[in-house]
Image (cartoon, rainbow, N blue to C red; front, side, top):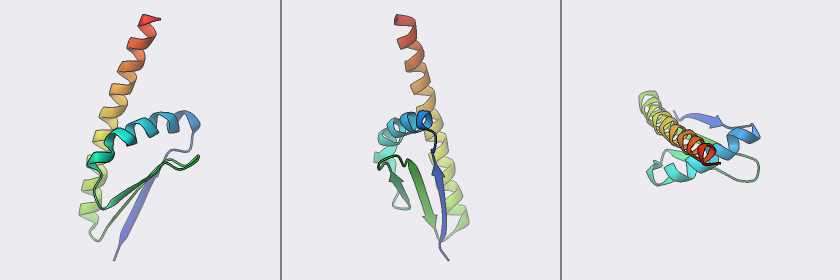
Length: 83
């Protein structure tokens, strides 16, 4: 059995930040995941034959994404302070 899951970023403000983070994380993408940054769609799809593997990949991705989001927010704050 093949198990699939996806994370989508539907809001324009979320898409802008997610695009940057997903591009930065792309070198670490596994064969079991696919990023879609076409047009107005921003999403990541995961697939695996084992639920444990899917959850581990998802957990790893979310941790890395959270770190990327934190870095982005920190950079935004530094930019705001300079202006």
